[in-house]
Image (cartoon, rainbow, N blue to C red; front, side, top):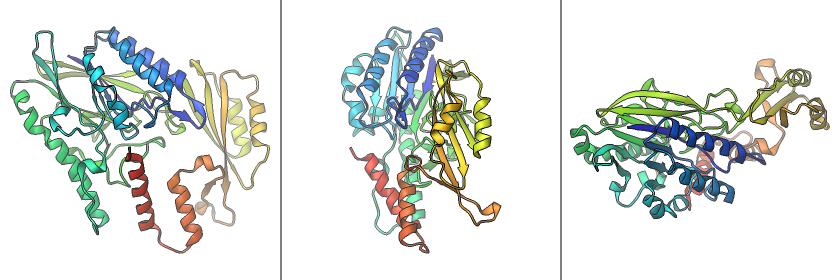
Length: 405
């Protein structure tokens, strides 16, 4: 039994206003070929199939075309769970139709808990693998709001709710474990100790979504996680892993190696685990410094021989706004066809501070997320105030908005 674990495709994702459709299509083409070449039996996609709850028509087309092509490979079953970016209703709309093609969709926690238990049978009808397909656990799935609870109490409640959900699988999988059938669990969450990039949206407010390894029950032979875009294992535990996103979703991921993970089970045991590197289809680069330094570094950028020309984020540190900066920098890359476009940021250094006290302030609204804008407004209205509780309330409002259908 061979399983491929991937996650965080984010079909429909843009980098500012720049489409990523071609890069995603190259990845999906590569993945279909890999399923065939590696004789994969089961494909697991651990959440965030789409970048938003209302995907574009192009993203839908890529998704359905890919699932159709999978049926031409040796892959017998596909298990897809919903992530925090996915709309439960969007994923579930074709659920019954896709089940006919052995594509199992668990977009959100079902009313019948047992629907998350997916036995994978061989041609003789014998169960060779069980997938406990836990999706992203929304706030309403794991706890009820309690008036007057402290931050610490709320944190404990959420963590315990996540842990309780996974412990409910124990009674369901006991007969399979007794028969020597391996069990794989999924999850779309933030495991404590994970290293994040700039492209992940917070799953739960602050650190409330973090779950430590010891909160998972015994009985899982592998836990296929999604949400964190950097490939990694958790607390040096080989059998709990994030494969990361297949393409870099922000400039903070420029040096990340993109992977999918292939598992091989024999005689009910995990025999091997292999990381397969995803090809780089477009190189994202980040250059930061003063204007002269940035110009020098732009001039020595090399051709990375990728399928598509590079995108470069240029962060220019300056004491005052440079009006013609974009034109000046674009002239430097004129005629260099292996660079497609620059994403120029001006970072204003605040004056009259000691060197070790200097802070940076983005000059472009596109650099700011809603929480940063809200905090800046609080600081403007109440410069000397403590904004922590107000910011916490704002974060909760953002989370509820993102979870609302």
